[in-house]
Length: 204
Image (cartoon, rainbow, N blue to C red):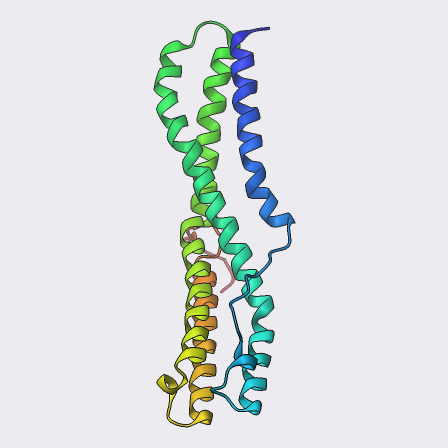
């Protein structure tokens, strides 16, 4: 078999195989880690406060799973992109010098160049690095806030009602920040608007 064809097929095979861990994130169910003893096991809260804290956390479980899944996907895609764009960019000048009249050598060069360009475009379009940071920081901020509430509730206020109110407000603020970051980093293309010139006879 043609060696250039073998090299091209090997390259495409590695591209596909190394993408499997990225795709696997979208297919598998994300398991949240146990954060340790919850408010129901804490001696610092009344029974009413324990119930309210536990219910608030239960309502957030779906959001936390979503954040964790998105963060893991964007992280893997970001490193997948870097792991292929960098070596492909290094390989391109050498391939350009090595091509011959063999059409498969030219196809190999074209495939490597096209794949690098497409991957860079998707990296920019998906905003992988920014989205990873947004979801990961949101997840981390919530768990830090929850630990603070369980360990040092008085840092949120003097009375239990004040502590709960401050805590719930800060949880809502974390959710709002992550949502705003997600919208700001939403994949899209910056297509400039074309302003049509005025034309005689055109309806206003």
